[in-house]
Image 1 (tube, rainbow, N blue to C red):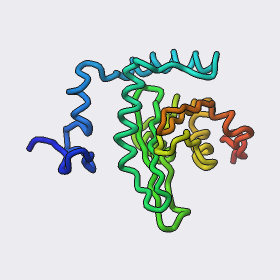
Image 2: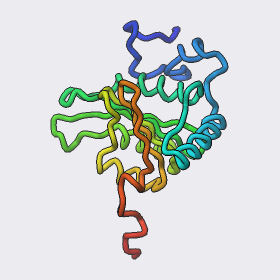
Image 3: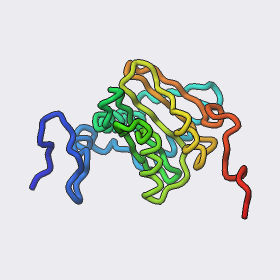
Length: 193
């Protein structure tokens, strides 16, 4: 059977086996979907700009368009009935693959899982443990930074990770994780047995 969303304008819960979750992307941007190698090349350029000037220009980049499109598609899947704040996180692995996560709230607030940690768990379950970038897209007007727990989980895998957060009005906040979590506890701080 052909793949299509059951409700126009809404994304399916998951793609049938062998089908793309976002098939409409290929139709709108034929040949423009970034490969892992293109993502890594774009990221190296952005990283150099961030290190030098504290900002970067992703305009016109297929990778930037992909980040915006994917994060918007995933953000609507967040389960946030209590805060009403939906957030999507995309993590760029060292091999150029992207891993997504959304926030999943729970009535027992302490069991809520943030988008960043969901993306990390997704990446690790797929065998990727080296990260270069964490991109966050929220529905709030201003960029939303990762919470302390997410910063610590991200630090476990990538202390020099860059975090780029985008608000719903397009405002960006960019920072390296080691600046967001100074004096973080890492594996080197634990006694070896």
